[in-house]
Length: 242
Image (cartoon, rainbow, N blue to C red; front, side):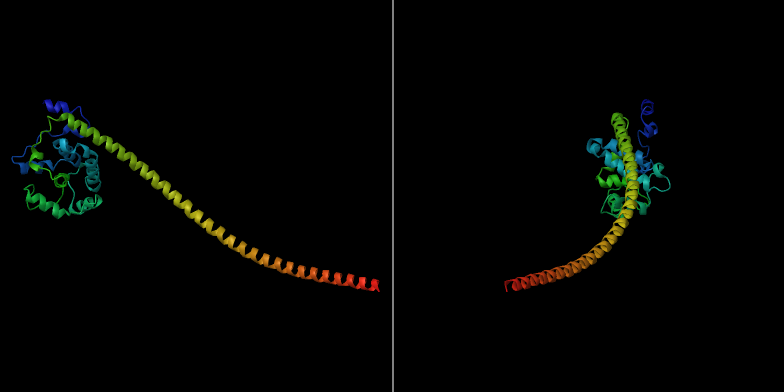
């Protein structure tokens, strides 16, 4: 159809992106939305709330990237996290709530039922932004194709920047390890030099003490010699005067 033709020209996941959810009820539509992969769920959310959260696109990408990283089995292809990794996600972004508190809040709005083990990123976004989940599942994805494409481009630009910064971070970590190795060698060399300096200083003190003793004895000798010479001269003068 018209929308499908349009999406095939857009980048990556949008070529198979859903235009509408087919569930009979809003509850069913939310369950269906949560079966899309992490990235598709983020794009759906961004498109629905572009007017509110366009400036949060980069942060939402970071959320999605972390979800994919913590999804140890399916990675980017996955659509939710188990409770343990959901807790890790919340801790990583310094969220004070627990998975249970998030579930209780969503359950109170009718978004989820009693039995819900795993956490899709959509649930987190609904909670995080106090989003109207019924509006979310019925948000038109086709009419705002330009916004979807823009969101996708932004996500891909952020992804490229993230990969670049990750590569730089790895290079920096390697440089740090090398610097630390060099520093350890330098510290050992400094310690060795300090020991040598202390030994040298001790030897210098000993030498100075010996020189001082020699000087003292030399001064005593010179004084005694001068004294004898003076007395000898005085004796000569006395005898001449007689």
